Amino acid sequence: MATQNQCETPWTAVPFMPERLSLPQLRDAAATCRGCDLYCNATQTVFGEGPRTASVMFVGEQPGDQEDKAGKPFVGPSGQLLDDALVEAGIERSEVYVTNAVKHFKFEPRGKRRIHSKPNSREIEACRPWLEAEIATVRPKLIVCLGATASQALMGKDFRITKEHGRVFRETEWAPAVVATSHPSAILRAPDPEARHRAYGQFLDDLRVVRAEMARVTREQADASAERKKMQVRREMHPGTEDRAGAAAEKARPNGAAPIRRRKNSKVGRQAE
Ligand code: SF4
Image (tube, rainbow, N blue to C red; front, top):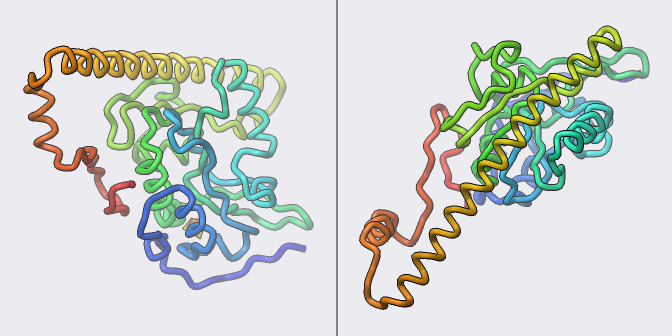
C-alpha cells in the first residue's frame, strides 16, 4: 500500500535552478528539485518535452500516474486524448512543446491505487520557476493552458476557464498570445457519454482556434523573413546604404541581444541563452 511521507522543503524551486537556462540543463536540474514536498512521494520529476524552437507550448496541471512512472508528460489516457484531438484539429504534436505547471505527481493513496490530487497554490507557486524558465527558453509565440490550474497559474486567480476558453489573449506577459481550454482529464471524467461528447467537441473547437492562431503566427514569421530578405537584397544592390531604422534598432541592442521581456513577479531573473 502506498504511504505518504512528510518532507522538509524551502517551498520554492529557485535554489535548484541552474546557472544556464537551456532545456537539457533545466531538465537535469529539475530532476533533483526538492522545492516543495511533492517530490518525496512521487517517482520522479516529469519535465516538459518538445522542440526548443516550438512556436506553441501546451501547459497542463501536473503529471498523472502513468506520466509519473514513465517520466514523460502526457503519455497516459489524457495524453492519448490530447494526441487524438491534436490530429483532428490539424496540429502536429511533434511541433509543440508540452509541459505542466507542477512537475511532480500529487496523489492520495487508496489501496494499491494512487488517485490524482489537485496541487495547492503553495505547490504551484513553488514550482513556477521551472515553468517560467521553460517559457523563457522556448519563447513560444502561443501558450495553450489546459485546465483551470494552468490557466490560473499564468492568467491569475480570477481567470475563469468556463467563460474564457477558446479566446485569444494577445500580448500577455508570458507570450504574444495565450489561449485556455479544458484539461483532457476533465473530458475523460465527464459523467456520461453525452457530456463527454459535448466536452470533447468544445475542446476541439478551442484547438481549432489554436491552429488558426498558429497559422497566423506562421504567416507573420514568413512575412518578416521575406522583409528581411528584401532588405538584404537592397543592401547588396546598394552597398553602403544602411537602413536607418535597422541601424538604430541594432544600436539600441548592443551585440544583437534580444530584448528582455519583463514579467511581473518573475522568479527567474536571467535571460534565456
Ligand atoms: S513539484 Fe516542482 S517545486 Fe515541487 S519538488 Fe517537484 S519540481 Fe520541485
